[in-house]
Image 1 (cartoon, rainbow, N blue to C red):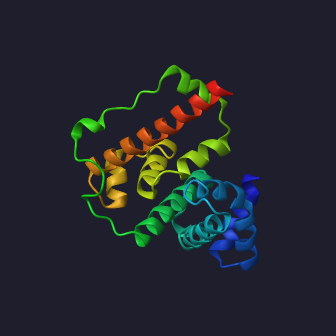
Image 2: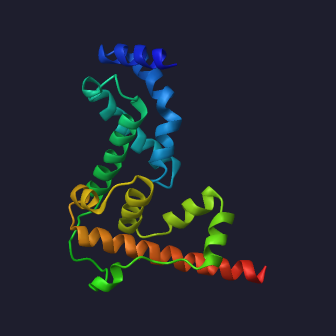
Length: 189
């Protein structure tokens, strides 16, 4: 399998259209799962994937074959999602988020809320995350799912670290509120 990927990449570097098509299909499911973290609708996720895959093809000469291909492609896909977000929205450092530094402390979940989380399906969790305002969702996904630190997020989104922390805090508070509502529903049912 690794040999097959190596041969596809080698052919893609020579602009072999069939190899590019085959590489696209080889990576499709993996990259689409990443795109669904940033886009709710399938058409939008596939569009994001297509943009990312074009960048992957254009940067294949930079790929180090001694390293795993999928994390490298995933990084380009995440960066493409961030670029797409930035191009669609003009950032302003002072947003509608509260200016209280005290709000930056961690949100704690009650034991009942943790139980509710364990009972949720991945689709329900994704739906909750997509219920967040877009900026908060993006910071939440980058921090919690992709593992970026606030300094990196701030640099990528061209905002301050403080704003990144506020977006994450706000996202967590909103998710906690949704979990509280779900916990209340579980008690009633």
